[in-house]
Length: 414
Ligand SMILES: [Zn+2]
Image (tube, rainbow, N blue to C red; front, side, top):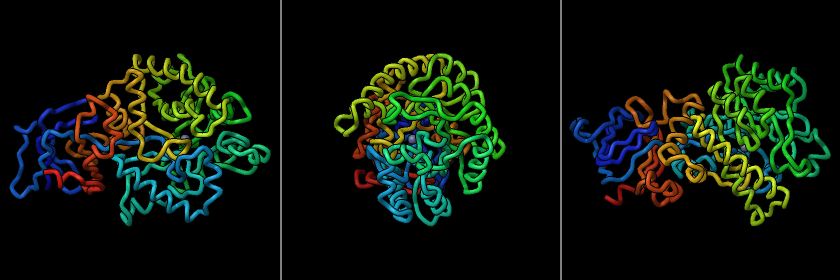
C-alpha cells in the first residue's frame, strides 16, 4: 500500500481537498479524504507530497496515435509500412502517458496499428496508456478522410483513413467489419474538414439515411459513435440518431446546442488545432486554410461560450497526430478553453471525469475516488491558479496508471 499525504487533491469531479491523503492498494485507490480522516495502516509506504497537487490522469478524447503531427498526414502514412507505423504508434502512446495523459480515445487508425497497440497493452505485454480505439474510420467516397493529396482527390477510390463507403448497405458492412476487427467505438466523418483544399468551405457528406444506418448499426453492436462534423445540418442528423459526440463542430449553431442539451451529446471542440491552423503560415499551410480557420473560430468561440452557459457536456480532445499538434500536448486544449471562459476546475473535470463518461469508462477511472483505478498525477504547483502548468513537463512529477509509475521525478525531491 502507498499513501500520498499532504496533497492538494483535485478529484476530477469538481471537488478539492486542501490537505488530503490518498491511499493506493495495488492498482486501486482505496481511500481519499482530509488528512485527519484517513487511517494509514502500518507498513504503508508514505509519499509526502509536501503541498503539491494530486489529480486524476488527463484523458484525450481525440487522438490519432498512428501518425505524428504534420501538415500532411497522408504523406506520412505513405512513407512507412504497417509494422513501422505500429511501432511508431506505440512510441506515440508512450510519449502520451509520460506527459500525464493516462487514457486516450483514438479516433481513426488507418492500418489497425492502434488496435494492435491497444491489444498488447491490454494483454499487459507492454506498458502504456489505456486506449479506447475506433480502428478504421468510416467515410464516403471522396470524403474528408480520403483526401489530402491532389492525387487522392483525382482518384477518390485511393482510400484514406478507413472505409470508403456509399449507401446504407455499405455503411452497415463497414461498421460490422470494424466491430469484428475489435473497435471499441465507431468514428464517422459526416462532413469535410475545414482545410480540404478543393472545397473552400465545409460541406455535408454522408446523407441523412446513411447517418441513420451508421448510428443504428453501431447501436446494435453496443458501440458509441464519434462524429467528425462541422456543419449544423449534419450535426442535427448525428445528434438525433444518438452519436456520443460531435467532434470539432466549427460551424454549428444554437439549434445544435439545443439538440446536444436535449440528447446529452458531448461536444469535443478540439479548438487547439484550429487555433494553430489560424496561425498556419508558420506551418506551411495555405492562405485559404488560414482564412477558413480564423472565420470559423469566431463562430466556435461564440458557440462555446453559449454551450458553457447551457451546461452542454464538453469533452477534451486535441486531434494530436492528425494536424500540427503533437502527442502529449493535451493540456494545450485546456488553456484554450480556459481562455474562452471555462474555469480551470471545469477544464480539469472535462479532461478527466467528463471524458471518462464520454468514453464509457467512468466506473473505472477519471476521478480520485475510492474504488477507481490509481490513474494519478502529482503536479508541482497549482493548475487551478494557472492551467498552463499542466503543459510544463518539469512540473508533472509523477504519472501513475493503475498503480504503476510511468514517470517519477518526485522521489528525488523529498
Ligand atoms: Zn481527428
